[in-house]
Image 1 (tube, helix red, strand yellow):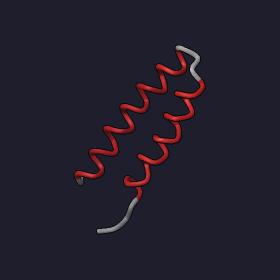
Image 2 (cartoon, rainbow, N blue to C red):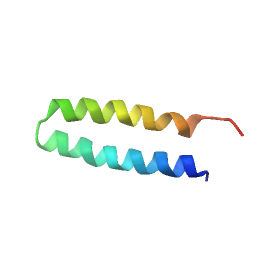
Image 3 (tube, rainbow, N blue to C red):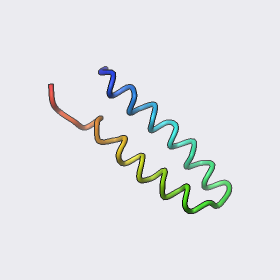
Image 4 (cartoon, rainbow, N blue to C red):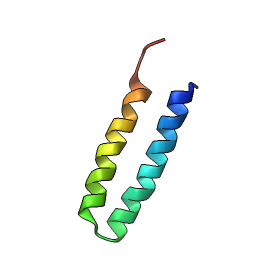
Amino acid sequence: MKKLSKIALFGILVQCAGLIYGIVNKAEDIIIMCLIFMFVSCLPLFDKKK
């Protein structure tokens, strides 16, 4: 697994924790930010460059 993929997976994990925090505290702005950053963090996982 490439270093960029490991960093992306760590970022997704942190964003999931933030998403749970936002859902528990009913903070819509945190939920939206987490979803946006999760989408951006997923992009390196689907990059097919060698």
